[in-house]
Length: 129
Image 1: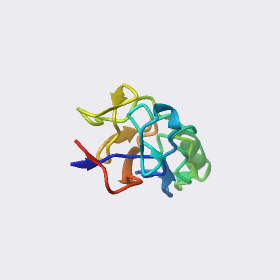
Image 2: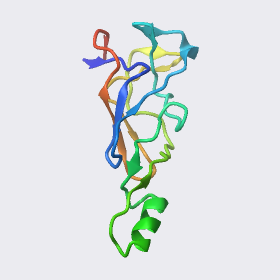
Image 3: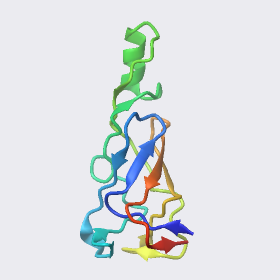
C-alpha cells in the first residue's frame, strides 16, 4: 500500500536541481496530523507545485536558448514548471474532495519533459491503495 500525500510533502523533478514542497490549501477539510491531504487535482504550478531550483531540460525554451548562447554548453535556467494534467494515477478507492486521493506512487509530467515524483509523503502513518 502507498502513503497518503499531504501538505509539506517533498517532491523531485527529474530535470530540477533541488527538491520542492507540495502546498495543499485546506479547502477539502481532510487532514492527516493536522496537515491538509492532497488529491490528484493539487497540481497547479506556483500554487501547489513550487519551482525545483534550476532546470536542465533542453525541452525548456529558456534552457535551450541559454545553451545555444553558450555555444552548446548546457546552461541550466530557473525552473518554472508547466504542468498540463493532474497527477496519475491516484488512489482508485479513496476520494478527497470528490477526486482520487494522492498517494506517494503517483507521478506528474512537466511540459519540459520532467517527471515529478513524491520522495516524502509528508506523513508516515496513513496508508491508502
